[in-house]
Image 1 (cartoon, helix red, strand yellow):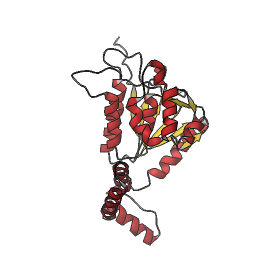
Image 2 (cartoon, rainbow, N blue to C red; image 1 turned 90 degrees about the horizontal axis):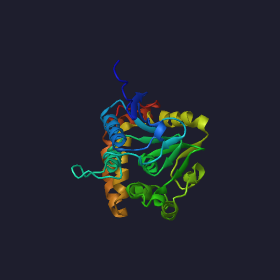
Image 3 (cartoon, helix red, strand yellow; image 1 turned 180 degrees about the horizontal axis):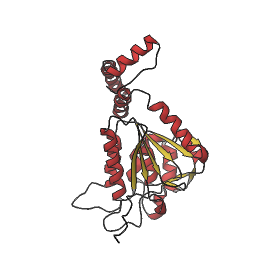
Image 4 (cartoon, rainbow, N blue to C red; image 1 turned 90 degrees about the vertical axis):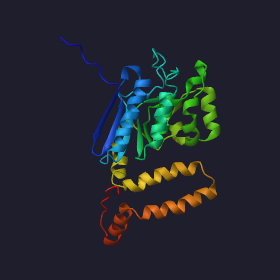
Length: 265
């Protein structure tokens, strides 16, 4: 009898123009390691290349953990805290860079606790919807580390003093506290998580893929610009957008008083 095939740690599937990426390690609280990071990145790359995909959802298996961070029990070079001199790029950093190159909207469906690297994964997504029962935190200071790899995202996502408090104390925070700190877009009861995620997706997939693609690129570019540079960039970007087929279709549908049919061109 042949040995049972080991299931992959990440499931990727397309449902109704949405790429779903599920961390499928419920027994390990969906923790990250090199393999998991690589498979998430590959799923993002494939979604980016697929014109039929309008949005991407990242979530965890089960109901207890979205992602508990780096797998502290990983060994054999598969730990996010070890470096391979032959391949010095950290897989987690490589994953985050892939998120930055993804121009399709990404949503974190936070079905449970998001800790350490799990917080980074959530912050890497454009939007986040969480259950009321989820908790959040960066407990690295309790094991002699600091959340260095996720700081670039968290510095953009939440107020500076609150972030520093989280990093220094390593305390866990409730979903409401995470919402107040601007880390989340929505907090809902567990029974409503799928409905709220679907509601958000139903709006996004009908919007112009071209506007979102160019808009996300501009959004990230402006974050690193001065105000004067942003104005210069903006006036050129809007002229470029106005020449796209999606923009022409948007103008036509407005004049004709009908729903636009965006093709992403």
